[in-house]
Length: 322
Ligand SMILES: [Fe+2]
Ligand SMILES: [Fe+2]
Image 1 (cartoon, rainbow, N blue to C red):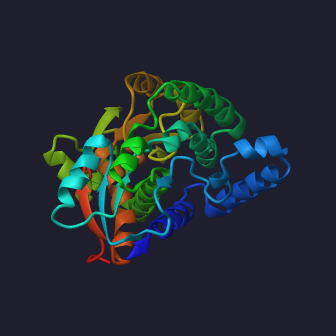
Image 2 (image 1 turned 90 degrees about the vertical axis):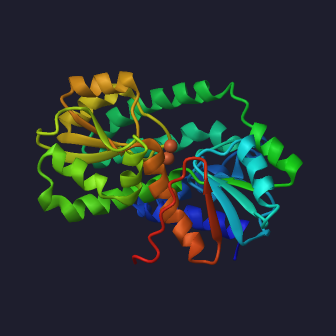
């Protein structure tokens, strides 16, 4: 059993711990936000989202009583009003205390672009000059912010309130967990990974991807050839909110990267990546998001929370295998 607040705090803690930028950098940035907040005039303080003082992930929030005790949750990749009604229906047999989404909704969706600054520091880690990464990412962040702005953000939270349900979304912390998981797994396997086909075969052994192959959504190559050299592998499109700038690929290639592993990629991005001679290995969207959520859900299950999967979540527990 955990409380909503404990689940939320654990998401933040694990998100920071698994961040590919390194947890020290994330903590320094959080301290900077706190220093800047203190200097704000009162009127600006009143407008400030104070969750930002403790949570570096703008796309991770909860809606409900923080002290509510949680023993059973319904977890999925996308949660909409339909899933809330599904939870109500399922609760007739056994109560459901929390509905947990991966993709953000409500204010967590409206603030999704804020988390994209992760891409700047991550690209810099892979050797892209930080000023280039920063400039291109900032342009894309403002595009994303404007793109999201007209959406009906609060539809889900409004429905949850009417139904008396508690909801939470854990986005970047879960994406950080899958990014770190893949990073570690690839590093461990490094000596056997020479050509693109080696990495493709390696990914296909991961249970969520194995299951996705059966669903015709397995890992696949978007550009490049299976017989190509992998070169340096970069995990720049697993975490970081949403797709970055399509102008970045030439700089990633110049930085010495040969292959990018991503969850999904838009066609206009793919075309740019192809022009830059990169191999693009798209691992799969629901399957990759499932890995991140599974790693987080295992942490909850280990603390006595029962998990029911819905909405595209390929539930696979690594608890027994530890
Ligand atoms: Fe994700
Ligand atoms: Fe996603």
